[in-house]
Image (cartoon, rainbow, N blue to C red; front, side, top):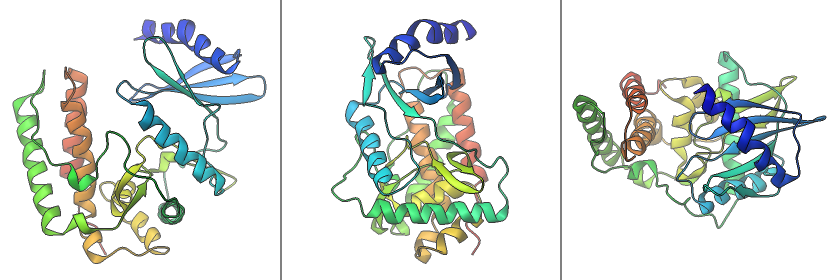
Length: 294
């Protein structure tokens, strides 16, 4: 793994950065899960270089970048791409972003969770004002994530069986609740604490729009709440309302989002032991999630 990382840094990254006329003073890896990221320093300027995971189409990437431009024009502290995309011979796509200042809260307090909910509601208000944007290529709404679970590679049969049962039960409950009629809009898709940056207690960055797409608005609240951060929901409700039917489905909307990811893993040509561990994470998330406490 170390040898591969060294190859990325020494061989490919400088050539990619040359697309933007950048000769870096320092490049260091940030993350390697899903999309890969590197922190790039040139003199007093700092950037984040993202390599999109394989399978992302140009139209899907452009969807994200265009929405970031719209939000930036409305005053949101988001990072917009530096002069578009760079594609290397192997088909990998890179985008360069300015590094936003600030840090996320490592351990949120009750009030900080409420604040995150309020920020999400304010984000929804501005996203709702952006018109003419349809569904992102390759995505569908969470209530539409209903399909047979493929058994692939090294995945144990009991994993597939349990995922299938959860998918069927979640789909049935969302159907009974009338989730397909819930209000829709463009959502962030993963507004967890790590994706908000603060500097001197002021919001300085909203990051990781990798999951932005058209979905039920309540899904965004469910994904921010995850398995049970109810204060996020209460903060959201201080700004925008949610119907009782939406509140009653937050647990299953989060489960549907987790199942979406599980289906993506199972849809790969080969499912390795590492990916089987990701499926086990999905099952833990699904099974520990509880209903929202009003």
